[in-house]
Image 1 (tube, rainbow, N blue to C red):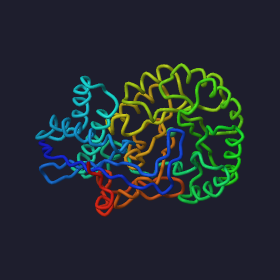
Image 2: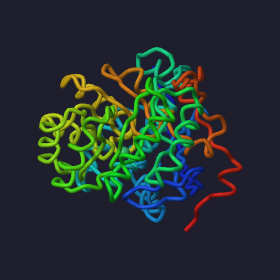
Image 3: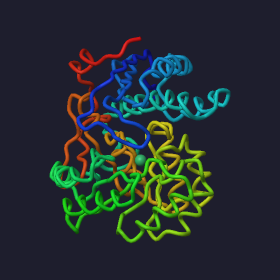
Length: 364
Ligand SMILES: [Mg+2]
């Protein structure tokens, strides 16, 4: 049976404001760049997807890379997984990571959306799964702000979608301020909720040994990225020393990086990022690797497509949810009792908000 032919690509970049600015050890971000990708097939199907590559000034380079990669797939019958594997081979010449991989991921996400639309199914069903809600935690706030404001913010985050899990950023200069932040957030969320923590790689290994040891009895669900993401030996040491589970993975570039990390036994969970792991295809490979190591998979950002993927991830754990992408979408996904509701629509159901594009389009 013939499949539709992939015809054209359109990439639009927007730089949108964040409701709660990100105040992290890596920097303060008041705006967030999104690249909106649309791939049109000859039957009129339009596959849509987006990536969020952090640094707005690099987006023109990613657009150019995407257009160049797309030439390999243009005028061929749509075959997302085949295209992804060919794309990864092609990228061997540039390196299978970084912005070249982000570009391939953006195409892959839009191609899978098109492919599931052609099959008249939601993405998770197209991938062989079933439609259902996905357990999530609210990651939309609790940055490295003054601990005093965190009680109110924690309450707000819980109420936003009847959540029972939130994430707090840690690694303040003084440990007492981390203690105060934890205390205030715990008061806000109550004893039945999970409290996750994220250090955004801000500690050196000796600092992490001290800080995590001190915080190890705080009943935190996990310690996320306490040290630089590539310090695998450090992660092994921390994992041996701490009771609290360790997680990383948002900075895995591609499934081969995830495999190396898991082979080295460096974390209790992983949290692949849809863009950095290589889109839907990269995620599927990583989910199988995690299953073979019997490691639970959380997600990082991109909750719309990630929620579909969690439905076909054998060791699926918690989905990260934020409001950041609401502004670029016609219809953001709903929340119900701490779960993300996957809409019963073909593809991912993602459509871009034209007003947002008009207002926040980024042009060089
Ligand atoms: Mg993180």
